[in-house]
Amino acid sequence: MKKAILTCLALSLCALSLRAEDSLNDQLRRAAEKLKNEFSKVKEQGEVKGREWFKKAKEHLTTSREEYLKQSADVLNRWKADIDVLKDQGGRDYFKTRVTALEQHHAFAVNELEALTAMTDEAQFRARQKSFDKTLWTLEAAVEQAQEEAGL
Image (tube, rainbow, N blue to C red; front, side, top):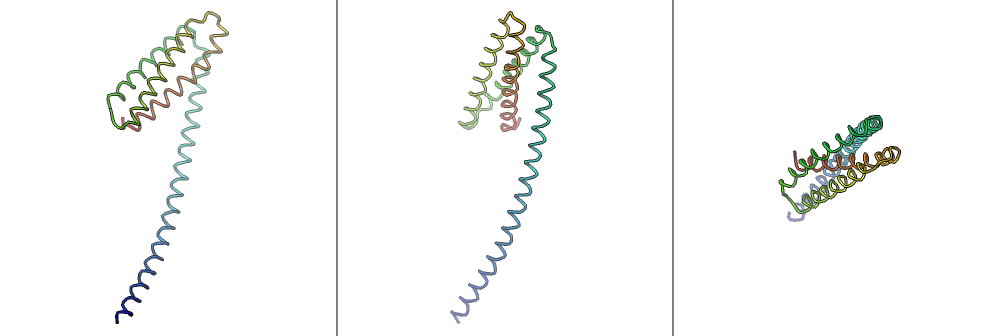
């Protein structure tokens, strides 16, 4: 009798594991489909962001020097305020490290803006402006990512 019960128990466990395996396969298939969908969303968002940045770069090249410097300073001030809000969030150590990195990135951008402001030659200014735009865009993306992580 014991042997029969153990055999039935073993057979039922085998049957359960087969169903669980099928379920696992279904779960893996659904997870792969979800990952594929998320990847295409991220790809589309990246393409949109890239087009926005390209459009901004073209606009910046046609913007007067004074207006460009004013707009850049305003943007840096806004991001500094956003970084300060993130800093007040506190949280885990790695998030504090991210906020510290944002502060350093912002300080680098401010120094780059000061160097850009000091340039007298228009050709050098426009050449350096392209590099500064990339600094601004990467700072923007980093701040947005931290805000998303913080739930803001």
